[in-house]
Length: 542
Image 1 (cartoon, helix red, strand yellow):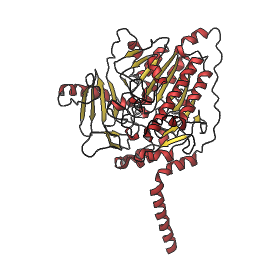
Image 2 (tube, rainbow, N blue to C red):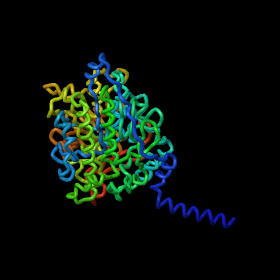
Image 3 (tube, helix red, strand yellow):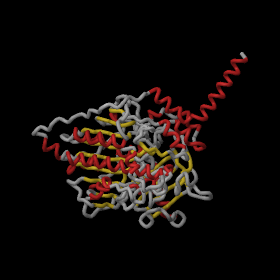
């Protein structure tokens, strides 16, 4: 008996040591054991039937829709606005061309400051908090292992399984709404809106899906000779991602399998094949890249082409931007080659701003803030639409527009009325943007993540923290980079916007699941460069 007790004690000591050393790896090991990844397999896109003479003209009048959403792109990552990663030395001509050949919305805003709620806003035209989709889905092990003292232990008991965290099936997606005109809908890349039955892309209106359900994925095998990796040891999120993410996709509801190249390149090439397969019918393509989200992995030939960038992290990140721009160029070229470019609505945006945990301080320049803040750096994103048949090249619209507007804008372009059984928060922005008078949209915009809330109206922006009572009030008409807080100097405007904020907030519902994290996020510094002394933070719940 004594030997048994000693043996059990020894096992517990060894097990505790192993857990302390390798705890980051355990979720990934379990995942691979439960759902192994197969070798690469070819994808057979459904071929559109040829147009009959009677339907040919009608079908040709309907525009195709290509919605390109990139992941965690910093406002300063593209060269269209005169900046660009690597001090502008990494041009993004393909992304820039969408704006140059169409319309740029100088004040485009995301649906949220994190990935998944923004995607819900894009696809439903509604504030994600109307559906209870308030927080970005993440597994409890991920949250517990990365949040530290910010983890909310008492909420763990009522936290659902990760796969069940998603967009309710009762919500109407753009893919479902477009079925009224028999659009064929395709989703490629990142989903992050749920993976349980009823929540997958195929359950939410998409006829075909190639990508992954989770919030992130490896772009290549870490030891592939054609990849360059950049690991941020100072970031607990990054430390979790590398051992736990998979290099895998699935086609529709098939088992997972490996892509045959860098994931950005793979998704781009498959998008061109899907476009060719659908050239003879109206289609909606939701092209959701996961670049340049971490983990940072560049194709080696892109990294090698940027030897003028000395910093390894910045060079790897820049290589990802280079590959992303090239892939988008392939998609645009495919539309042209298949005779579809003139009557295809191409929309480009990012789900939110660049992340402070990457460690690159200029990603969102000239704006303050990061992903996981409602400062402009977190929610002010590039927002372009190209539709040569309807939009003159070089157009511009300056009033604020948002992700919620894409739903209404696309349905209007397809000649489909908005649903009358639910509130749609978005507007048809082309209706006002293409009007010679360019009237402004007379409405506020609203964001919420727990007790951190924000509203924007008539160029005035209020952010407040219910947890601490802290407020920020900015006049973006005169101070677009949020340098001068006017909360104390203008109490009347503060109170006015507070009333507007809560009039919208009262319409929202509680989150479908509780937050597991409530922590301070630094506004003006990357997490590896936080100075001693005082600095401003927001309280972010997720």
